[in-house]
Image (cartoon, rainbow, N blue to C red; front, top):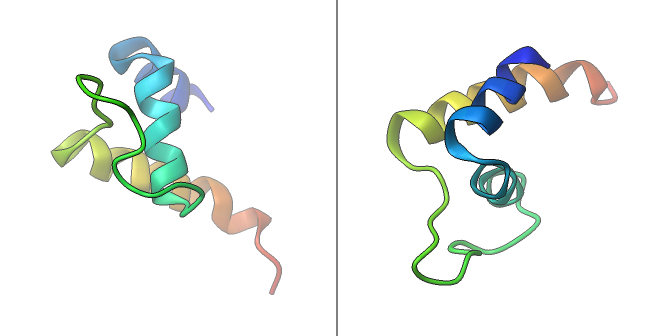
Length: 61
Protein backbone atom coordinates (compact mmCIF):
# COMPACT_ATOMS: atom_id res chain seq x y z
CA UNK A 1 0.00 0.00 0.00
CA UNK A 2 3.00 2.30 0.23
CA UNK A 3 2.84 3.22 -3.49
CA UNK A 4 -0.78 4.33 -3.05
CA UNK A 5 0.13 6.50 -0.06
CA UNK A 6 2.92 8.04 -2.13
CA UNK A 7 0.41 8.96 -4.83
CA UNK A 8 -1.86 10.50 -2.18
CA UNK A 9 1.02 12.59 -0.88
CA UNK A 10 2.16 13.69 -4.32
CA UNK A 11 -1.19 14.43 -6.00
CA UNK A 12 -3.71 14.68 -3.19
CA UNK A 13 -6.22 12.12 -2.01
CA UNK A 14 -9.16 13.73 -3.85
CA UNK A 15 -7.51 13.49 -7.28
CA UNK A 16 -6.20 9.97 -6.68
CA UNK A 17 -9.49 8.67 -5.30
CA UNK A 18 -11.51 10.25 -8.11
CA UNK A 19 -9.16 8.73 -10.69
CA UNK A 20 -9.48 5.33 -9.01
CA UNK A 21 -13.27 5.58 -9.22
CA UNK A 22 -13.05 6.40 -12.94
CA UNK A 23 -10.62 3.55 -13.63
CA UNK A 24 -12.81 1.08 -11.76
CA UNK A 25 -15.90 2.21 -13.66
CA UNK A 26 -17.70 3.42 -10.56
CA UNK A 27 -18.20 6.93 -12.00
CA UNK A 28 -18.23 8.49 -15.45
CA UNK A 29 -15.30 10.57 -16.62
CA UNK A 30 -14.79 13.40 -15.86
CA UNK A 31 -16.16 13.00 -12.36
CA UNK A 32 -14.73 16.13 -10.73
CA UNK A 33 -16.22 19.60 -11.22
CA UNK A 34 -14.08 22.20 -12.97
CA UNK A 35 -11.39 23.36 -12.29
CA UNK A 36 -10.47 20.12 -10.50
CA UNK A 37 -8.96 17.36 -12.62
CA UNK A 38 -8.26 13.69 -12.15
CA UNK A 39 -4.84 12.27 -12.89
CA UNK A 40 -3.76 11.99 -16.51
CA UNK A 41 -0.84 10.74 -18.53
CA UNK A 42 1.92 8.88 -16.73
CA UNK A 43 0.36 9.43 -13.30
CA UNK A 44 -2.92 7.83 -14.42
CA UNK A 45 -1.02 4.90 -15.98
CA UNK A 46 0.94 4.44 -12.76
CA UNK A 47 -2.27 4.33 -10.72
CA UNK A 48 -3.90 1.92 -13.18
CA UNK A 49 -0.93 -0.46 -12.92
CA UNK A 50 -1.04 -0.22 -9.14
CA UNK A 51 -4.75 -1.05 -9.09
CA UNK A 52 -4.26 -4.01 -11.42
CA UNK A 53 -1.53 -5.51 -9.26
CA UNK A 54 -3.39 -4.76 -6.02
CA UNK A 55 -6.84 -5.95 -7.07
CA UNK A 56 -5.74 -9.00 -9.06
CA UNK A 57 -5.13 -11.11 -5.92
CA UNK A 58 -8.62 -10.16 -4.66
CA UNK A 59 -10.52 -11.30 -7.75
CA UNK A 60 -12.26 -14.65 -7.79
CA UNK A 61 -11.10 -17.30 -10.25
